[in-house]
Length: 401
Image (cartoon, rainbow, N blue to C red; front, side, top):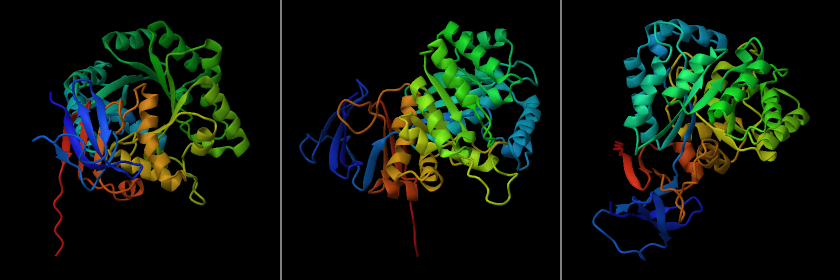
């Protein structure tokens, strides 16, 4: 394919530049002041657009997505959502998962996402427990060249044979929910052991509770260091860290940093599920983002559940997630954006992307002039590039009379 020139794009630092993409290498070839590079018939004029690194979605549940109305869920806390989903799994089929997941990825891609990590349940009701995984493996092949899809098998005390079957089929990582296990420490240890045997990474749902005594994250950090596990470890949610005293949060954050664990905060779902039992001075249901950043932890942010029993809303838009981090996490707009771009790619083990020479040419052009405007308006008029190719374009017609 021929190189693609993006003309007149505004970069996050405020400078207007021409950016040349090389689809053969998938990298950004040149970044220059406007007008220095030869023009061609396929050039794209990005005047009025802010050109950003393409977001990644580090924590999705594509097998559950778009089932809120189907599952008949009622608003509630985490146990209520788990119960509603488990009841609905009796009627979940492989084709059902495939089509809902594909619709959701199309929404994510249109909003700028070029890489997704999704968890997938081992479905205990209604037949083959691996049917959700089989659907997502099919989808992964369909998405090649447009969206990179990583799949983590989410389990709670599942038989080891079933976990090995899932990895044999092609799952990328092992997930776990230690706080739902009868023995959290044993659950963490077993997951790390199997992951080491199979040479795959780990992404745990950790401390998805406001209980300050919850200890999944500390268990994980200590187990990773004791076992010298070096295959990539991520802890998602970590809500209870936001419910402890600052000194304790700082100590735990340092342990997490020393263990090389990345943390994914999930504001939309956790704000919805957590704190329902506290009608007065309701806590925010968010991990201690600032303490983690101060300790040098790689922090990412994701959208988590999209219109399913765990969250009836969600636009599959990483700019919505970043905006929430500014509002409830008290991050700056640049920090919020980094959590869904550079931070998200880092926890997925992906190289740096962005409008910089030599970077991966995964880019998002959004109609805006500044990062704060991009997060504040979340304008749907966007162009999305993956490996130097245009993979999605959304145009908007607005009429004001």
